[in-house]
Length: 449
Ligand SMILES: *Cc1c(COP(=O)(O)O)cnc(C)c1O
Image 1 (cartoon, rainbow, N blue to C red):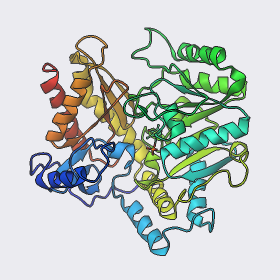
Image 2 (cartoon, protein in one colour; image 1 turned 60 degrees about the vertical axis):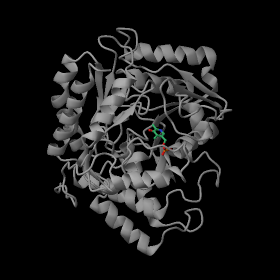
Image 3 (cartoon, protein in one colour; image 1 turned 60 degrees about the horizontal axis):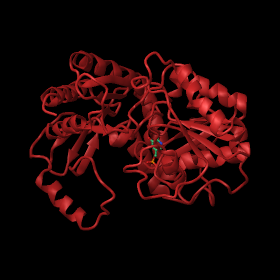
């Protein structure tokens, strides 16, 4: 293991109000040319990113607890990623793997087959976005099983294309007005320990879901059960122990595929290569994207060889899928995770977060739960004393944090979750400082909202 290197000073420094004058000027230009449907949660424009900091165009250095939504797991400009990208881009930017293939695609596929769970023969197909990977997993599952039905869960997020919108649970902002949606998608309850009936364990929660599938869909019609092992946009919901294994067993007994959407939870984020590793579950197919290529657009479907090979030649692919520069970046990101032992860093970050926040969570009555794994931890804000969601407070805390130079993201079906997704390369000092800013923001706003 080598020491983590930084290019930028790892410190929080505020030199203007937020947003600063240069960010405001860019916001003005943006408003006349960028579609209103594309929004940004943080109104400062980035100029330079490294390790745990984002430096904006006005020279403010912000602590990053968002990683561009769990993407820059290795940091925003990890040396190995930058070097691999530079070397690749000097040789060629594109040939199209479907026209003139190249080694990087093959090498990356070998690496992904190695780090995913299970010692069966695996095959890989590369794409550009998380949604595209999920959509292709559905295509593969349907061809491989000869069935149509796809089972998804409450609070699920799978993307913004037509099939993945149908698979996504939340109407606003992801679906509203964009229908009609793809057919043969069936939604059942997930295991949500904080909101499930008291005492319901993972097996019972799985039975609740599977009984609906049996009654309303019919097991023999199910091509795949698709689930995020830790639900991302839905609120970092960690299903109760036994939930995922029970689903996987049911799939195996009924000829359906168990598909893990690890687009957000995968690639070292939770302290293991994949979140399913914590549950000892081996999916038939997995999707991954966000953390896999150090910020370059790349996604993958990895799974049982016979399933991916069930699809006819030419049935999978795309002009840009597995772009050579993105593949080089991904190889650099995987090397970085190994060289810097970032899986251990994720576990360490989890311990630091708990050490910093648990007593506050215990003493305040506006945080219902702190949950998650590794560097994927969230706090669920509730109205004092009960379980009613408190999105206003989550928003106030996030806004306050930004004023103090900390980038922090909200999520959740009710918008009442604040999620902590720091790059795994953040220093302990910066992590602790960010957690203090966050705690102070909670204390400041818990009474006033
Ligand atoms: C972000 C996300 C997606 C969609 O990925 P995009 O790259 O935005 O298309 C799909 N599934 C999960 C679990 C995600 O978190």
